[in-house]
Length: 334
Image 1 (tube, rainbow, N blue to C red):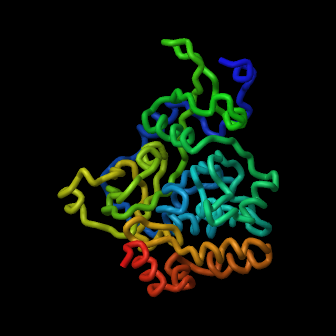
Image 2: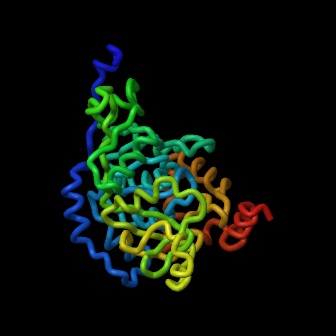
Image 3: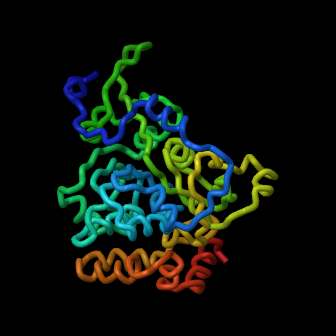
């Protein structure tokens, strides 16, 4: 251990408890029946997202995000949520729409690995305003260590050891702790488990019970689904349980993890849904441009989010079936 490392201590706030026995008690009591869980997005958010909950958003960056569910969380004016910002790009931008005058404070604490930026598209002006306002508590992580937190929770252990973060400012602003390996005596970093109160994940297919299929990389969603105390699934399409049973190895998320199933075709728009549709770069640029001015941003949100009753109306505002077909052709390189 270098002198610099020896002096370094983490200063970040731990927003959720890594107590694995408390989590085990919760999951022991959670219903696990193979029952019909299909409902509307409105009902799912009303039933399973409460003020003060800690939220995890599935997907990664602009890929396979649960846009429709996130819209509804903002539309229902949920308050004082925590968030795992695990490469949260447009999903973070959407949730920040709930932090503005007249809308209250949707986010009040964030475990941050990657937020505010929309990757190569640039920074979200409104997300930056929210984070610079001083009203949101922040604890810093890397993408890898935030993913490890979900993995630890899915394994049912209070932490996982890592070498990552050691000696960095990210460690100093995190809630990780230094430990000594009982076998080698070397210095390691203990990454605490994270059990979200609720997670929202968009998938390609699900049956009515919540047996889900994801095509392409699942990133951290395998662990997020098993760590979350409540899980809302949105899917491109419902499939029959008989189809699931014909190919059980394609099930990424099993029914017993899931609380709600919402069929939402194009439910990740304007994000990219692998093998389904490409991201709508024009609309993402329009969103970023609107945020540059607070009045323009407010009008944009009133038209696109608060002024519609459900996600299908938002899709119509953005070009409807014609635009979605263009994006599908772009994804499939037709």
